[in-house]
Image (cartoon, rainbow, N blue to C red; front, side, top):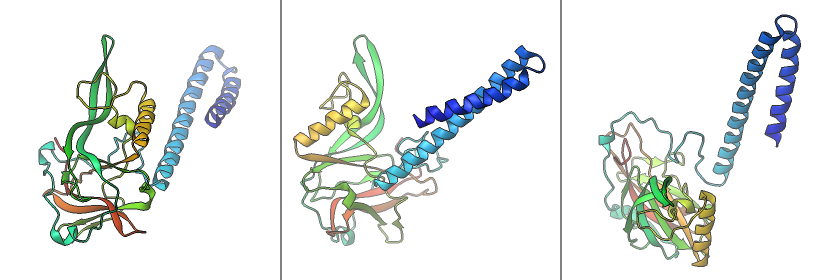
Length: 279
């Protein structure tokens, strides 16, 4: 509402000024020029308003403990991507014993875990075919305690926990390199909960075989999946693995989703950072 009001006010003011000037010479040609000027300046105001709105949304995301998603992003950190796609370094091996032994697991009954890729899929709707985005190429994995298998840049890790004993706002991601030389700060750790129910509950009619499915808009499917989880007393957590173009040889990290209040972790896993994501 505020945006529309501002746009209307700016447009009227600019038009009133421009038209009064245009009437002095060739009224039709100058009127057209004045209208084009108003359109141009109106578009500039619209773009400025959209930029402000995106910044506000990004600030809200950070305050909620989520990674911000600005226009043009794809739920991945905006690292420069100058290396060729053939430089992916694979997935990390099991954690060194010195780190694994330090992790205390919260009692959250981890389950239904898988490693996936974020990508497009198609589904049939009558005689037409439509495209949506979601988590595809899913590989089921098993947790050992609260530790899941190793992942690499471009992977998305999904896991479910008991809803009653879990609050995502109590947890922070911690990552340290296997050799202990690098400890990632908050801006560089794998982002948490960048994906929603609509990315897991794909649209009915797809051919990938993942269940359950639902129809409707993205928001409707997200709501349906939230209800599906709640009915089972479960909550979902996702982690997506960033790349770094300067990490030419790849670096292995041990990561844990850690609760500072209890000293226990909801999830732990190893992560190999590559200069690019998985081909």
